[in-house]
Length: 313
Image (cartoon, rainbow, N blue to C red; front, side, top):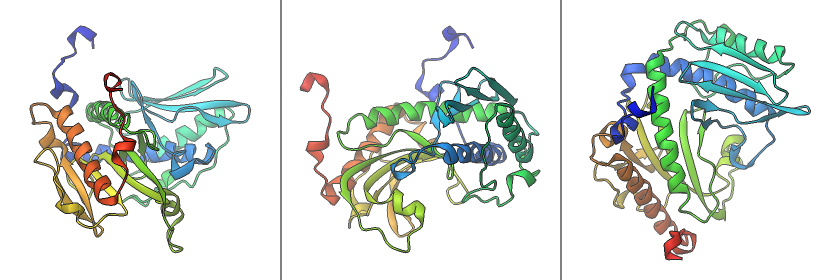
């Protein structure tokens, strides 16, 4: 598309994304992302709160960023414009796999592992879905093969917009904040703020929970919908959840609190947001109102952690 033909209207950057329109493609893409995410999981040095396993929004799709291997690095990028998977190394070598309708998860997994072998990269992963409604090992999954390029591109366009909004919101906070990144296990693009206070970790907690919730957090994110939530949505939760959180006001007015495993979660329906006159500002208002609700009730030092605009310094 010629740059002069790209519409400036906000609603171009918030296109419709009804789950029913592309659910089969979403399920297949989710499994593709898990294959690549598990490769990054195996090779990246450990970082706090599992920040070493995530994927990042790029100007063409989603990518791993540089992954260390022996004396060089490699990275794996999904290109959702030309619809291909690219594997590049810092030595100059590369491999390309085309993404197209009918490409089964089995074929995708086999192609990725063969491409890595061609590049001299030997990685072993636990080759089955993690916390996914599919339990079929990747090499045996001939069921998931839907790839509608138009819907994948539309989903990525939403991620590009949300990524930028979350980064703007993240920059307003002096405290510890994670990168804006996509967790491939649940397919949510997220950013998390930390108060700095550590928490006792239950002995019976999983290894994932022990590291993810070792400190007080207020987390924010977007996911395209799933079996429980049948629409794309933005969310926020405070952990641990303070008493009365679900009584706090949220903005815009279409946002509301729901029960999530016994704790309040703020929800903003994406399809309702995109119908507002200024959806980007409304999203920022939602993030800010959810943060203030949790931070105030949990006793976070809000003023100390607030970044002021340069002209107010």
